[in-house]
Amino acid sequence: MTANTIPTTAVDPYLDGNFAPVRKEITTDNLQVVGQLPPDLAGMFVRNGPNPQWPPIGKYHWFDGDGMLHGVQISDGKASYRNRYVQTRGWKIEHEAGKAIWSGFLEAPQMDNPHGAYKNTGNTALIWHAGQILALNEGGVPHAIKLPELGTIGEYTYNGKLVSAFTAHPKVDPVTGEMMFFGYSFMPPYLQYSIVSAAGELLQTVPIDIPQPVMMHDFAITENYTIFMDLPLTLSAERAHRGEPLLMFESDRPSRFGIVPRLGNNNNIRWFESSPCYVFHTLNAYEAGDEVVLIASRMSSTSVLVSEDNQLDPDANIPRLHQWRFNLKTGTVREQQLDDVAAEFPRVNENFLGQKTRYGYVGKLANNPLPLFDGVIKYDLSSGTSQTHQFGEGRYGGEAVFAPRPGATNEDDGWLITFVYDEGSGTSELVVVNAQDITSEPVARVIIPQRVPYGFHGTWVSEEQLTINY
Image 1 (cartoon, helix red, strand yellow):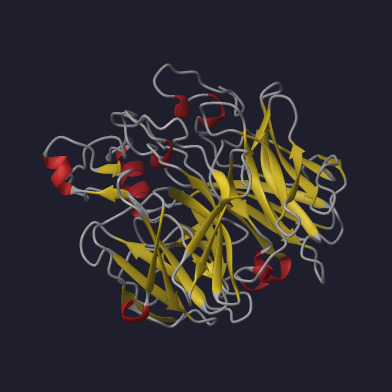
Image 2: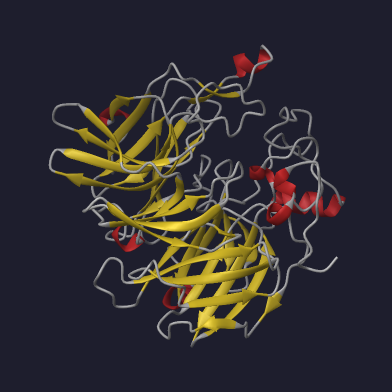
């Protein structure tokens, strides 16, 4: 097979088409550019995603694949590409064995696996903080990555101080430089909250009480607060023993949102209840007088990690942008749908994270049973309007990451960057869109020399940050 050949299989849609893994790790310089890369766009776009090294054991879920990083480095109007596996402990064991050792989310936990019941794939997201970029998977420790090579340095435990799992979506305060993260667990404490200093020192980890273990994928920060989401996607060993799903959405449970001062703990967290829902990803949060405002892609319910979908909810698994306003004075909650368009993978200009932003950028989901994005929506949250950049017929992309223009003063002065796959030609591109002129054609399309499978989350590392990565 050539590098661009797509295998076909009747086994699983997530092993087929552009969800299928690529087998080669390559490095290519001087890539073909259609249009012109902006001269002041300099740095590296890196995206994480699942790329199973070997045929899976049993049923395969998209979340199961080994992490693979795809990076495009841009400088002086030129671009280079490389892709590398995140070489986790599990990846190394399976690489040596020449086969899969772990089964995935849709199979029963392998309690008798001598290497452990769970594999940290490192496949979900990335964060740059304190001079280091980390590949993340919420079930385990982060992995430090060397830039621009994308080589795996190894597990990153903050000099042994890391005592919890590490969310795939930590938040860096652009003003203080602090990074907040959390870890959830099947065993008590079910939730732990941590803060890392701007210099990269793990300062504190405190337990936060929640009634039972839940899958908590994301959270949010404001200038003074951290917001946790205790949503009714619950984990239950008792259910599993009865032959029912370990993970289940309990539609009769309310959603709970916990707001804690940045340096607070379980003693001063305040909980607010709202209608049952699930949120994979938050856009942003901020403070407005007595209120804390949260904006996120909300689903009325989800069966995304349950093998059998027996729900009656017609809106299950359909994310739409919503807003919650939590009044710290009165204890009331106001929940509002902001748009009826299905949209996920929300991002903002992260130089304004935790502050009131005018703009948000969210992937527009195609009318397809698979999670395909046919465009990116720019929301003007002040006016309640939106504009959409369409990728084009038969072209599907992913999360659009905001790369700010160096020295910019306007919030939307920069570019939206994502990989796009063209089903007609079977090729992948890095697409660069002017965020201030989102409905226009991309300013540049970088042709990638091999197919880039659909994946999860990415980040933009500026040229200045690249020079201090160690």
